[in-house]
Image (cartoon, rainbow, N blue to C red; front, side, top):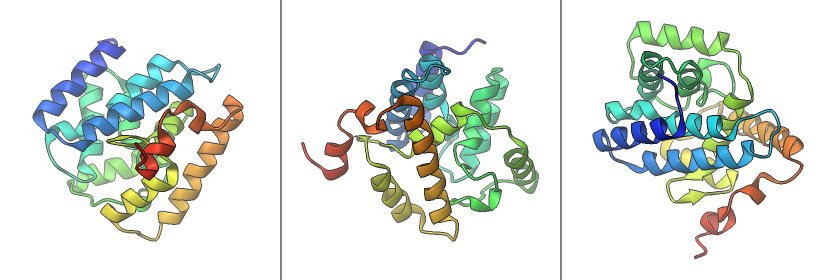
Length: 201
């Protein structure tokens, strides 16, 4: 099945019905951030970026979970032949390609853990992987936000394991990479990011 925006939106709506929660609106804002930034990159498709952003957390359709949603999303997309989307369901959580940099709990089988470990270490990332990793850190369920706002939001919910600062540094590196490509601040492409970060309405 060919993946396009309409199909991705339909699948997200179905997933939302199965497991409603803030993750759904978060996914929509991640997708919009991906689309807005990709539209200013000559080598990226804004439509493809939008679809990948919408589906990055699609594994949450299976219910409330921690890192299990990564492999649930991978399988969901692979069953439909969406190979890049499947990769991003896992890669979005590992801007550093080391499974030990996870911030969640591995509520998966030993076999699934071994698969994910190997997958993360051997995956070849491109700018779509990096874009979703970046935009995942630019979106709250209420809208776009400053990276630092999202960093604190995640830290409050997941704690601050030893890899936390290294993960932040990697996201800042990716931010710099895309700002070199688009020749402006990413925040210029994210309406309301400042207002949403500081609760200004």
